[in-house]
Length: 317
Ligand code: TXA
Ligand code: MG
Image (cartoon, rainbow, N blue to C red; front, top):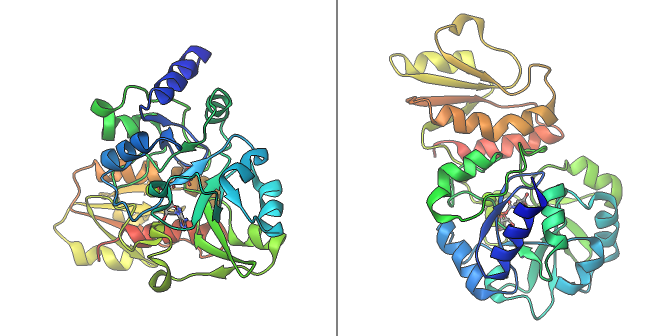
């Protein structure tokens, strides 16, 4: 990526355009966080309902108290440990943060992305960037510039190409109630790693949290192809005899299913590698003209929890 491209991207943002940017988690659809006009364009392009708030991206921790106020000590500790990085903090918002970003809430979600292009771009700007993942609402998130272009080619003047996203799933979202940490969305940083810094984290379940963290909406990150999730893929295959099946597997192919399209997330059984490959694999399977995708549930620990969370939301309900 050349500096010229970043300068061109910055210029587009200054002119209230929205553009696609790479981050270490997934690609984002970015616009000036202080411009209602740009923010409206983001919602429109994504077909995102206005009740679903956006994440604000800042260039460094030093800018946190420009967007948030009453920041608890635990939030500073987490920021110090994980920023730049894949942790989003939900904090009390400063009054000048537009209501459209926060869906009228008193809180704002904020993070410092850990990608050289996103950081170089923020460095050229005098405003933070609001950026949801660069996919139409409910669809599979993008981890390459090509995924973004497949969704939005006609509508975006600038798609900054930063290669394949290193982490591959969205940031972990943490908020605070009575100074206690609460997980709103599983993500790139495991709960265990967060708990190392701030102790026990309360995990909000699907039922209680949908108004608060719509990232938890039950059908989200979904392929167009009917998708099923199971601990035992071999057992489920016969239920779809006569159908074109694709398998989304953790580390081992299924020997008895040679004629079936099989995709493996990490041959080594490495959860970080599986997370990195998850969405690209889902995009590929979804484009393979299948009748059904059968996904294998991963070991439910560390990043496996975040991957299982995305798979749960991808399945047919
Ligand atoms: O990794 C990421 O976080 C990516 C990259 C581009 O930074 N962004 C991303 O944005 O995943 P998006 O819009 O797809 O997801 C934002 C999530 C939504 O689930 C939203 O509900 C939640 O953040 N959120 C935003 N503001 C919130 C708030 N005030 N309280 C609770 N949840 C909030
Ligand atoms: Mg998203």
